[in-house]
Length: 359
Image (cartoon, rainbow, N blue to C red):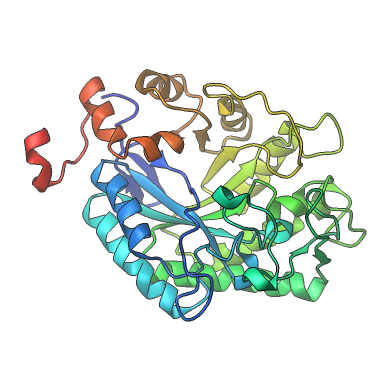
């Protein structure tokens, strides 16, 4: 059996293969009114296409735990029952195709209230459905971004409660895995990094204090997330800063802490919390960070970052660098990548009966 198409079991859940789809925002929800944050026909078609294409696990895009936690006014949310009901349509279809439905729970922090990327992604104000952002410290992400309001301890506790409520709703919506978004410069990542966290209380300063919020979120969600269902965490393994930022060494240490707090797999990405940083991209450029966590922290990992080629993906798994691969842009280009890879490698992937002519 090829590594890509070997089933993978975490807790009591078996994922049919190691070809997974990472969260990728679609910025396609209504920005106001009763449909705010509710999945649309676009979301259904987008995820359904990758499920019929044989993807083993689909992690639905960053889904905000509150309206204030959205990256843009057009993001998905899971803070009310209307959103839950709309998600059920998606999870039912994914499960019927043999794909495991997962969801990333997120709060954008100081990077909230921005426009769609294809419109420039600049901060937006009330005249464009915007709002005031919050963060661990009142430090703007970049020039042209407003300084966020510094969160009080009571507000931090409220946000932990929002993550908990979102996890309960994700379960009710039919998701089998929840992923906590701790990467790419959003709120949890902002707390982790000394680059963005200048607090002097129990949530800032030392490594233990800067990781406190993240671990409290993990603990709160693990309390309500069933013991038989996995819980993932996404991390930016490095900020690509020469000094003053979160490092790969921090990530290895943090991975062990996450493992001890009930995280089952680390989704390893990089960057996003510091503007103007030069990132040395290339095929599989983030894989070594995942491999280091797997080897040094004894925590399962998924690798991401310009993984496009079938042989490349197979080699990452066969070499023990990761337990699964997350294909982002490649799955946007080719929703049936898994089926094509199975044909090339001689693996097995479910083909819908309606597509029997393509077998």
